[in-house]
Amino acid sequence: MELLKQRILKDGVVKDGNVLKVDSFLNHQMDTVLFGEIGKEFKRLFEKENVTKILTIEASGIGVACMTGQYFGVPVVFAKKTQTKNIDGEVYTSRVESFTHGRVYDIIVSKKFLKAEDRILLIDDFLAKGSALSGLCSLVLDAGATLVGAGIVIEKGFQDGGSLIRNRGIRVESLAIIDSMDSTTGEINFRN
Amino acid sequence: MELLKQRILKDGVVKDGNVLKVDSFLNHQMDTVLFGEIGKEFKRLFEKENVTKILTIEASGIGVACMTGQYFGVPVVFAKKTQTKNIDGEVYTSRVESFTHGRVYDIIVSKKFLKAEDRILLIDDFLAKGSALSGLCSLVLDAGATLVGAGIVIEKGFQDGGSLIRNRGIRVESLAIIDSMDSTTGEINFRN
Image 1 (cartoon, rainbow over the protein chains, first blue to last red):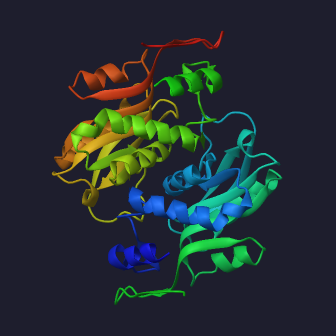
Image 2: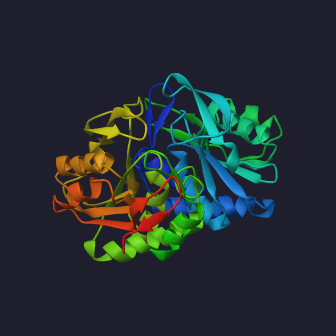
């Protein structure tokens, strides 16, 4: 998605440790106009899949997922990162490791909101080592629902999450795949 | 907002301890079609205020805030609940008590994304005792920005958060204000 790539080149900042800071438009401040275009693009990519529900993970996936959900006309469910008093009843759960935040946590979704008849599209802002996305896949499989694929805004193509998920036969559509980046020069190279 | 009130009556569940469960359409599963209508209503209410930015708080405020932001054509910033490695530089911070989750936490926003020239609209899904909303107000004041008001989806009018914030001269527009509810009968009464 050319608009997104241009925005990454303009406002993304490459930091040490393979960190790409895009907090000015994606995951702290969110550009709702750009998000609208991203939502339309995911709709175009998955429109033949009869998606009944979108599943994402708090917090930074929620904005893109909602903006996408409106074009499909389907609800968005977000997996929560810790058990809260507000979720009662049975939940599906999966373990996720966050390399960015250096911790392991459980993600949970109420069983009320994932059903065997659902056709689920996963949406998230980033794909790097794939732990979060893999956790979301597990929730869908546990529910016996159909996983139609995953829509990712930015994939770090030099990390192995994308390969791991695709090698399981899951369709992953990333709107920008970064093949390399350099914190010294600030250079970012996209996969064609 | 009649559409919202009808939805609360249809799908909201009153639990002990003044808990209203609306997780089937608002804060776990999110009805993106309803969110679109909510966004349009906030736009109608605040359209003369020259809003430049929307501020919300993770996680359940993000969806409604993004759907609202697209109608204003402005970015959404979400306050984060814990310090993460992904935020560097200076932040505005405020302390918030969550009565729902029984804990106290800090919320932070990067100083890059709140400027003195900004005209900020706060958006959140719930207003009860007002701690989260009060914390967001503090962030805006610390930044020297103009606070044009707050748009709330559901206000528990029998708790004092709404009065506390309005008594500070801040405009609060709640799309549904609940005056009373009963966990025994399931009855919910709205303010006219």
